[in-house]
Length: 117
Image (cartoon, rainbow, N blue to C red; front, side):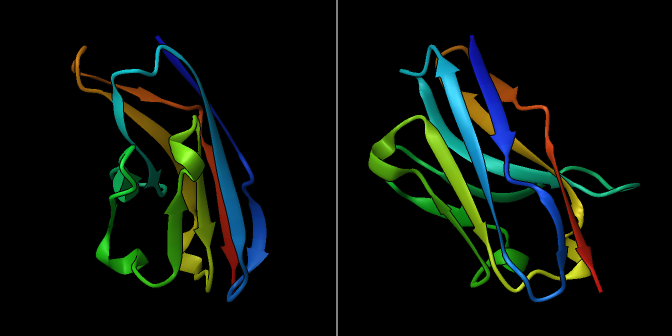
C-alpha cells in the first residue's frame, strides 16, 4: 500500500505562484512514476505532469513552461511549482503514484487550487 498526502494549495491571484507538495509513504519500491493530475468542476481528471525515479518528466501541453515537477534525489516527496497561474488552472489537484508491479494507481485526497482573476 502507498499513502499520499498533498499540501500547498490555496487561493492566489492570476499571475501568482503556488508550490504543491506530495509526501508518499508505504511500499514504494515498485512505484514509478509519480505525478500530478487535476480535476475542475464538471470536467474529467487530466494529467498535469509526471516524473520518473530517473528524473524524466512529462507535462501536459498547457502546463509546459509554467509548471515544474520535481522529486529531489528520487525520494518520496514530489513537488509541483506552479507559476503564472491562470483562472483556468483552478481545480482540485491530486497526487498520483503508479505501482508498475501491482498494476494499480494510488491517489491522494486532493488539494484545492483557486486562481482569481
